[in-house]
Image 1 (cartoon, one colour):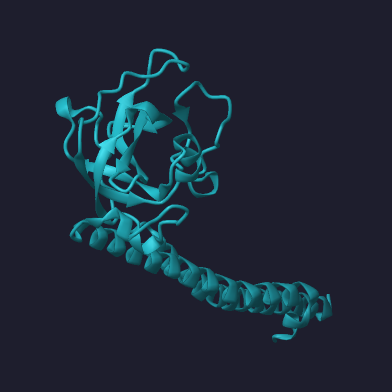
Image 2 (cartoon, rainbow, N blue to C red):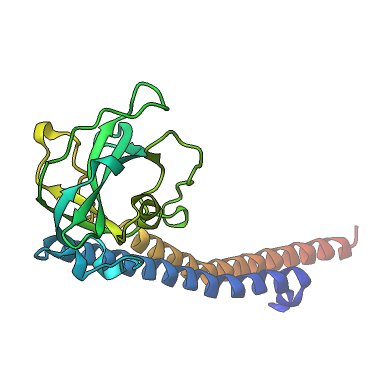
Length: 264
């Protein structure tokens, strides 16, 4: 009754089913690992945001990349703002999804080194070539508190680093690039400033990252495993249906043959 399983059509169908099952199981585990990584990353961000601030020089140095473990860590830095080398980072969104720019101002530390400070968001100028209106930072020595971030690159952010921009405008926040203009050592990464609060609420501070969402990776994992379980079930259903159809066809053929054998 099951010799039809040796036919070319059924052999191919069975092989496809045998391939799909482990592939779908592996895809489920891939989504599970993404879920676990997302949960771990959210926990790391939450821990770093609530940890006591430490001096920025303890976590980074010139030419040193900010590690994943130290990203979003609360840090402090004391120095004076260098407005002569202040630039704006184009095409950045505010908390209200408005397109503008981030204000990037070097903070000169007591030892002569510098650290880049993202002071927040301002609206763009009336045209793309003009420098936007940027409120001045606090004068004199100031202690900045903020979140430590790694240098931006095209590979990390997906933002193309365009050339030929208007003066004092850049696309990426990158300590190596800014160090060439400052002619002094610049600590790797940058500080996303949260304190002191700017006068008049401008520049608008960059909001803290949302680390509450875990995405739908777990749901996708369960979905793939359900698909994997459904493949053999579907295969069995098709086999039983094929067997039933063949039995019915054989019975019908037998009845027709008997009818022909009866004398007129």
